[in-house]
Length: 205
Image 1 (cartoon, rainbow, N blue to C red):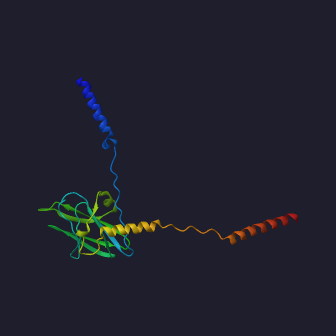
Image 2: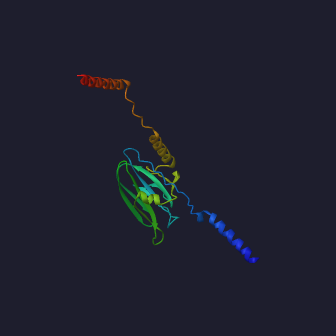
Image 3: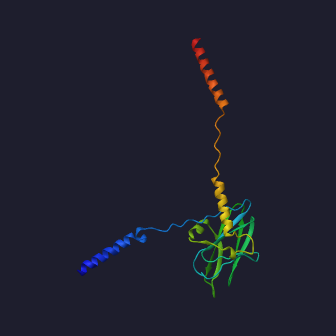
């Protein structure tokens, strides 16, 4: 009897495991983050910070001595700016500098990580790629309260508005080509009749 009960328990456990998402191979679908295009004549930089070491430490991005935005672990923000050379700094016990040449109508990426320091973590900011940004899943946009006072960082509602505008433009249907006017069709038909008459005249001759 005990053996039979053990078999029943084992079978029930196996059936439960087979119906669980982990056994069935189900995975949570993570949608990629949509980044709007920069305004015409402007460039933009997507700053992001994957989770990892120094989770409790900030990685504020500064330009010209002013904070553009804070950048906590697992966060990102988009900065729209004028084309040209820009120099950004992050600082804790050490200072790191990133110089970028921003191009018009171009989107660049930059990542900030916290490396081990003597007393606290040291920020490391460097150029990145779109693939690296998309690979850093579960990123969330920086709150508007953590941006500024330096200009450039797009607030969440501004990003939403830019994406909605892009969708509206893309959804506009291209007008279909107008059919040939009836007059042109009539002329074509008349020319065809004339050609047939000429052929008949040649046969009679």
